[in-house]
View 1: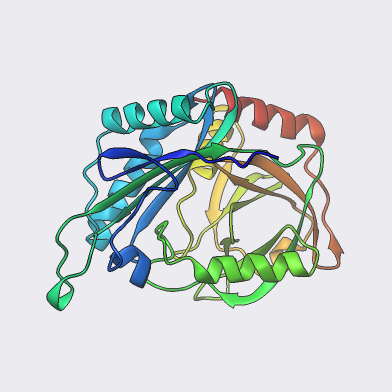
View 2: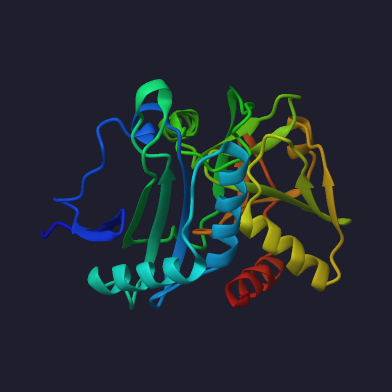
Length: 277
């Protein structure tokens, strides 16, 4: 079996992954002081690139992490990377990582680090709903609303969920309300429309935001309200979503069965998300 050995982009140059290097004192490596975006590319084109870059820039300004990549330059880099890695006819996972670069005296930084990668992406089977568990963890700090490389709590939560046989785990925020899962946004649906859990500690999900726009256009009411763990078990349809997955229904939380979103409604939303540009 031949290993996938892609090219990557690091600080203005393309390298074989064997040859790519960052500084040993890079702040992203040492302290998790970085930001990233994960983008789905289909047919050689990154989906919703401008929205991903705008979210990264918003976090860059908020956290003081430099990020100077323009939309045009990002599109050019990603396009060449997909060509180099022979991914133009496949679904691919593109990742953009930005850090302040290497740390100097008194934590000064001499130059920012920019990394772009692209690898094949295999989407989970669309017909299989997800099973979630409520994690014994609180998702609350000054950076949880940003997609930062300080990601260990999320990886640990996902590992705990997977060990117990679940697809993902649900995190609570500083007030004990539902925040998100370790890899996705949560959405609830009932007879009144869509409910988006309102939480100061949740990442503003790009796909969740688009689905809110889609529901509004379809005449489906959208509410942003705090959601408790008990609310998740009160009979609503629940879905997870992110930029790679799209939208997936949930059919169980811990030992409680959750009614799946009706197939026709799920298909309407999936199609609208796929067609969104």
